[in-house]
Image (cartoon, rainbow, N blue to C red):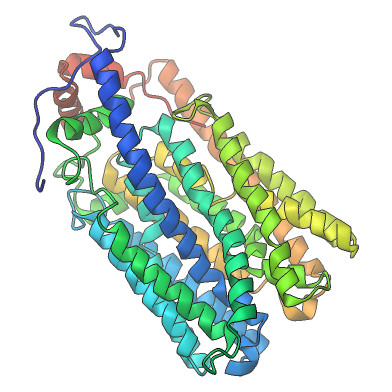
Length: 510
């Protein structure tokens, strides 16, 4: 059903005096049904997109092992430039794209927008397989990164439009464990294609790798167009009552409706609010440092090659560390919840930082020895560090939780933080030079230092949020928008005064 939905009033669990009543069984059943729909359509669709996103992005690292540099005549520097070009467009394209996401702005159908971007980067990836020189591969990487810029922060924003902050971490963990699955799955697929498709129809195996993975992504983009939802107010595959419930849940979660007011709906107003918030820049610096520190992920096959095995064996050896990382990622988020649907502790900092420390230990082990067994063990530690890293589980969710309203500000903050953060990935492409191999001592030193900085910044963010919550506990008034509070009261079927009382209970997660 197109357009805004204005169904009858939702069930409420607050009496006229503003006291919370036992949950309404009918409301509870309706909410569980809505969550089942989201968990079987939204999360799986974005999960599969994310897997293919990373598979397309990192295919070049596997292709490098089978003659890409030789066939295209690339020098070491040219290869690093090709690798980093994607992250230039990925970094600078995220903010402009995300500024258009809030539902009062230009992108009214995220399902169509995201699907179109998937098709676009799939096409660019497939064309990488027919390039014959440095310039052609550079252009393909540019046009892979441009549409990809819309996906990651857009996916986080779309999830935050449907799930409450206490549901978001676990769903995001499932979703972004897709990157570790992609690293493992991509290595298996690459090993199969490179070993079995070499010289088929006179075409090199590395070219088949790009062509097959790119065409698969195009088909995926067509499929998810009907799977993905839009916003709670205009998704076609939920009815009016479910639409109202979805909006009411988010209003209850923050004490305000999750909608921009007329004053907030301007793209640049949301940007101005995000830029003025110190938390936006702290998160951006933290993500930048994390991405620089974990840039080893782009060179994992190259690092595995130092163990001294064949190309096929090298790719297969990269699979177990990433599978373990995916499992730990999900378990970490599950530990933060008392069940698969709710956040237990509201804790963010330690669930992110503990795995980063594990990654630092892995770097230190590899820095100290060339033993095959020890270095392979260290690769497991490097991979499980991804369970708490920037793009896994909670970091951007933490941004969303910490800058929740208005939606235009939240979207801009996510875009700024992740856009600047990806510059760390770009810088990381130059931190693993061939001349530093096979020990890569400077690379490990850079990574350890960057991760130490990111952990320190994360601690600063945590303490700032703790201080804000203490001020709220002491009776300081939370920043409140009267128009959104009125909308929340309407959605929940309660009075404005009751909505204001609920708003006083809002606290930040740290």
